[in-house]
Image (cartoon, rainbow over all chains, first blue to last red):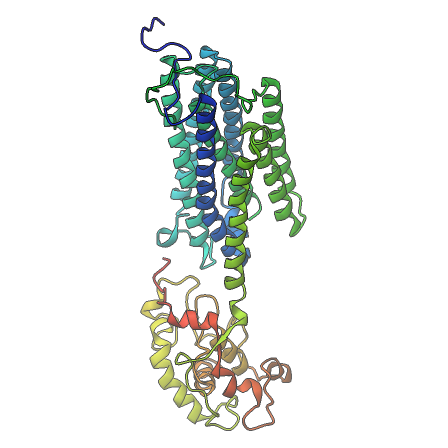
Length: 217
Length: 275
């Protein structure tokens, strides 16, 4: 790539930081603080899950049997694999291996697409069987009067999670474009690493959602 | 995330002080990824083994272990400054407080009793041995039934009231004797009225006389009910030999109601919530 204005390693740290390392540490700490807000946001939903589960254990048991374990498992495998490809993209960026960054970002992106496709089939099945949140619930097999609560939690929790996946895909496109413009180098790869954090967090949330929703209801 | 303002300084990059830029080896990354997939398999496998209540704990422990692997290796907390790990962990500390405080309220509401205007004036029973059906009680029950029950159970008690149409299970057809969940005798209906059943709301705030009257009226709609046994009375803490029945027969107990019941009374009923 013949570029005249930006060269590899051409990133300059902002003037209010003493040096690039300090800027990197500050950015990273900012990302950790963002992770805290994310934990607390999903945390609120997990609290609701815990409380309703302890109030209506038989209802949770019955309702969770109507979730598609195989699709949930497929998505768990997809997300964990995508976390791995994301780490490999970060490692490649730390070593300045441009082609590898693009390859691993591409793989992560494709896996995310797979995740959403599986999610589409899963949601369609739920809609088809009337297993919907709150007042939209239309299923006569599940008789416990509080059953719609379970599906409210299911759709809100997996829905917000899926939204995070979509945001992550946008961030990967952004990283790929910047990689193609040679903006990253072993001296500057902060955005790649921090999007990596975000992506691993999305994986982490799913690690809890999958067993709690699909397996041990 | 990163700021691209031009620095006024020399623009030199201090690359030497990247102490915390630990580059993970690809081998480690793949190994951890493999471990995570393996643990996913373990989670699914162990969920199929019946461990009773332990299933939940085991699933949660594996999830915590997996999340720790992701945090320590993939997100690099193991190599990061300690304060970043502390920041992240603090969120789980606050989450624990969140769960604990919510649980202390929500899960123990049945143990908290409230007094106040919600609680109907209980007072002493106006009837001697209200658990024994009399035409007077049945007629009082009929009046109350028309006020409190017809919306769901229907004017004739056939379970066909307009508000009951959307309920699942359907309101009981009181004229038929089969399959009464709590049994078909005065103490059983009294208990159902006091505690609610499935979609049927709690009527525990009604004075005990009213609940007994309703019980006798409801039972008068179908074939003759079964008789109450000594155990039935004992379960309600009623002494059937006394005219006022003692502790469980209404009277004082209605002066305080569980906060759960109070919330139910305050809440807007949800007959149309499910179809």
